[in-house]
Amino acid sequence: MTALVLGPLLRHVTERSATIWVETDRPCEVRVLSAEPGVDAAARTFTAHGHHYALVEIEGLEPGSRIPYSVTLDGEAVWPEPGSRFPAATIRTMGAAGALRVSFGSCRRSPDRAGLHGLDALSAFAHGLAGADGADWPDVLLMVGDQIYADELGEEMRAYIRERRDPDVEPVGEVADFEEYTHLYKLAWCEDPAVRWLLSTVPTFTIFDDHDVRDDWNTSYAWRREMWEQPWWRARITGGIGSYWIYQHLGNLSPAERAADPLYAAVRAAAAEGADAGKLIDEFSERADKEPASTRWSYAHDWGGTRLIVVDSRCSRLLTADRRGMLDDDEFRWLDEQCHGGMDHLLIASSLPVLLPRTIHHAESWNEAMAAGAWGKRGARFAEKLRQFADLEHWAAFDASFRALAEDVVAVARGERGEAPASISFLSGDIHYSYLAKVTAPKTRTAISQVVCSPLRNPLAGTFRRANRIAGNRATAWPFRMLARMAKVRPLPLKWRITEGPWFDNAIATVELSGPRCRVRWETPRTETSLGELGTATVC
Image 1 (spheres, helix red, strand yellow):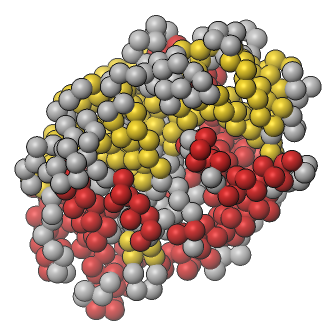
Image 2: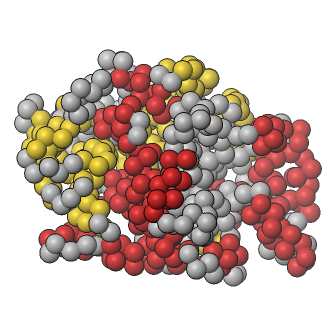
Image 3: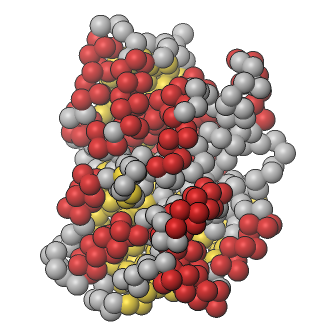
């Protein structure tokens, strides 16, 4: 009998359509069924490196639908699982009204028996939803980076690697290739029944960050050169990007966007001939890393009065010997086109915070100027080592990109690109603590804010926590501001201050948008199955 390996995952949704993603243990037909209102949609699997996947596209649904569904493989029922204590998995389409709830977070280590990373906010969130009536459920679950940790492995993953290869051969303590990535995704999304159920019933969108591939991924041109000199790196980067394309990226796209994807068309054609598409995906992945402009991982969706723009701030970086940017030229042109008014709210999701604590922002902009030679060659070598050691690679460390994004956002907020929205919010993770920052200058008719929620499960250790708490103090910013000025960094185009937080607990946040109002709530797990409130704030 054909078995379900991972999923079902409810992915891209609109008011009238939904996509279900699955992994199976052999080639088959995947069918999604519901008696009411008569849902019956199917897709054949495609194969990559011996693994089998399908995306089932369901059309003709009603706005605001809540449709319990089942999954069959070659006619045999596999979902829901018999005896599950969770409610039936449900297809949840967007409502026609303007209200929207977006829950989000980042940085989730895989389960560990020792409990080293604290209680899992995503699991506790799932348990809470399972016991609720659905009225307050999020419309979207957005995971903004480090869905998996390919370079910081739990014991279960280490045991799997020991059974497969010599664990003392590079890369030591990290995944090596596509096959090991597939097991890492299974641990992250299948081992906890609550999380597996959550992903089957709440529409999920994602974007990767560095640990989905490797810590400090694409920090600088020097980092890229160093990694490609490693004999094991090609298998690692093609495995990381290729698995991301399958497990995460394809589900972010609408059916029309997927149909226009040339790689997806090639993979489907290979499946029709009974061929494995692994080589096609490897070639695409290597090109995507070496030529960032060859593909786009960012995407944008409009739901009612809200536009969500999800920005790839990792794979699309411009890193050459003489230029650096958070995004390459084509990617930034795309982002510039997406930033416009005419909506109630604009959400810009980037795994990396755009508005950091001011101390850290000045330190990173000073470091970038140093690495570019502001204080000579010796200073540049020191700055590059410091950049990689201290993870100084956020938007602040790409000063030209930060200023260009700030210019776009201010133009939208001033009504220069259509009617100004009530709010513009950056949604980010990465830094392992949570806060709200509000822009105080320039003054605009639109509230501009930075909402950070991190981690879902991977809190900072004591020393790093203390250092970041100190960096969040406004009094510590001025020495680094002076250093930045001495390195000829221009004055900031925006001013902002942290108004809520920071909180260093494992957490998940929910942004609630209704008419002109925007509110945020952060919650932390109090037990394995319940959340408690960390804080709430009104953005506008």
